Every structure is written in C-alpha cells, then in structure tokens.
Length: 392
Image 1 (cartoon, helix red, strand yellow):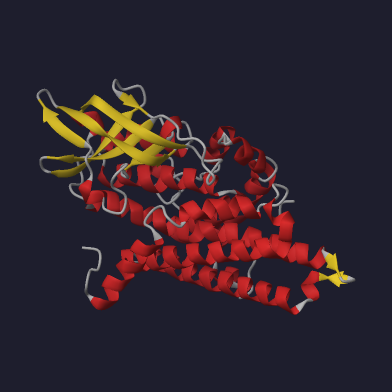
Image 2: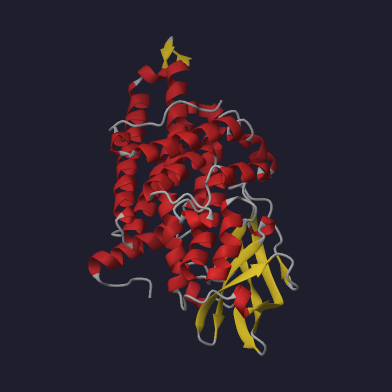
C-alpha cells in the first residue's frame, strides 16, 4: 500500500508558495507516484538502486535545480528545491540522497569553486543525468572531525597531483562518473575531481545494509591516483570552508526531504486507522490512536513551517549554517518519531513491505547520522547561543 493523496497541510503553508514552487512540487509528486512508488519496495528488498530513473530525473530538472540556466539547470528558488526534496524522499531516501549528492555536494562546489572549463564540462552533463557524481569527505576514521582526514594529495612536477587515501560511506560512489574528493595538501584541504577509470581509483560498493537499501553506498580508494591540476583541482577554495559549505547545502535539502518520509508514514497510519476495525469500530475512533495522530500532524506541521521559513531566508541570502543545523536536527528527529509512532498504529502490519513505514524508519536511522549527526548539530546550536564550543 502506497499513499498517493495530497501533501499533508494542516496550517495551509502551501498558500505561502509561489506558482512555480507549487508546479515543481506537483511535478515531483506525479513522478514519485507513477515511477517510484510501484517499484521502490522491491529495490529496497533487493538492495538495488533504480538507476533507470536517473535520465527522467534529469529531464525533469531535478539535479542542481537552483543553479543557473546557462549551465543547463532550472534556476529555481531554494523553497522549490526543498519541496522537490520533500517529494523525492516521500518515495524513498535513496532518491533524495542521490539527487542531493548530485546537486548540493558535487554540482554546487563545481559551480562555486570550479574553473569555467570545469563548469562547462560537468554541469550540463550532470544536470541532464548523463553523468553522476559523488562526494568524498568522510573517512573510515574521521566523520564528525573532517579536519583529521588522512587522504593526502601531493603536488608533482608537470601540473599533476598524486592522491592516496580512502573515503567511506559515499552515496553514489560505485555508479559515479566523477568523485569530488577532499584531500589534505601542504597548503590545506583542497578539492579534486577524480574521474571514473582513473588508474588507482576504485569504488567498491558496501552491501548488507539494514538502512538505505535502495541507495548505492561505497568506499572510495585512492592508490597513487595521479590527476591533472587544470582538469581536476577546484581552484576557487582552500581549507575546510569548501566541504563545509557543501554540507550546509545538503543539510538544507535534508531538512525538507525527511518531511516527505514523515508525511508518507503519517498518511499511511491515518488511512490504516480509519479502515482497521477492532472492537466493532475503526481504531481511529480510540483516544490513544487519535493522540498519536494529533501529535504526528502537529510535529509535521511545525517542521514544515520551520523548513519554509528557512527556505525564504536562504532565498534572501540570510540563512546561517547554524539555522540550517537547527532545521536538519529538528526535522530529522521529528520524522524519526513520526515513523516510529506510525509503526505502532499499524501493529504487526507496520513491518511489512506492503506498507512504507519500516523502510522509511530504517532509512531515517542513517539520515539521523549523516551530514552531521544529531549530537553534532546540537553542539553547533549550543555554540551559537552560548559562544562556547563544546566539541573542541
């Protein structure tokens, strides 16, 4: 059973949307209903990514949608981008993660820090879904502390760089045509574009996951990988500012995306409660179930309004990384709790693939951790309000 009814909107937040933003959401919703919902459980069960959807996502403008039209992108508002992420994750976190990595973690830094030649070569291909990218920052021993990375890039004669090291938990890694890799150099952290097939570069897929099963998660291994500086090095940024700015972009999309998963679970639970009869009446008529549903829709509504306000601030250039952290932290927690509550309403049926709840709940366990753990975002906010950094 997959829900296809209208987005949950208890407070009428869609009345605050522009026509183009509504159209983006409706387009994405139709795509998810028609092409994702019928197949996504099977892909999750089989631990495969629905790669055949990538060209259609490209044609619809789902990749890098806030970037300029001159590079083949849609040049949409950040609110429209958020609504797109909402609908994609209503289908599955795998689709939203793929699009989020492609747009926020690869296309965004190429646009922001790449040379004009790099932008012209990669962005139109990636916008069209003709090339897939991945983002290499997290390492086996360094997640929340990216400054400790051990992947090294050393400058050599003839305008070349030699990269050695490894990255872990990389979405899209095994299917990517290019990896945007962050490595420590003698001058600080630098970003490099490493193309598939480069000698010494491999991306083995990580299997046997209980979460994000329809997503490709990989290691990246660099064994004396030699790249050309002009083609590979991002010239416009030095230091951790580069990767951290990308993470802020991705976290913003997550703050919207997880609400799609929460919405799907809430609507599934509501529909189930209205039709499941126990003691001669629908369980939706019992006080305990109504309490759960009331709390679920209230938390979802609050999170929607937070995401919308943040999106408007981001469109004005006024959103701060700390505000993005608050939205990511709050909304993932909210979605996680809604999924768990929805599972209790469905009872034993809540664990079946016929319903999306357990799949969403398992996915959100990963989202709760990646792009900054819940605890790290708590400390980011804590530092902002106290002026004291607790994680150093």
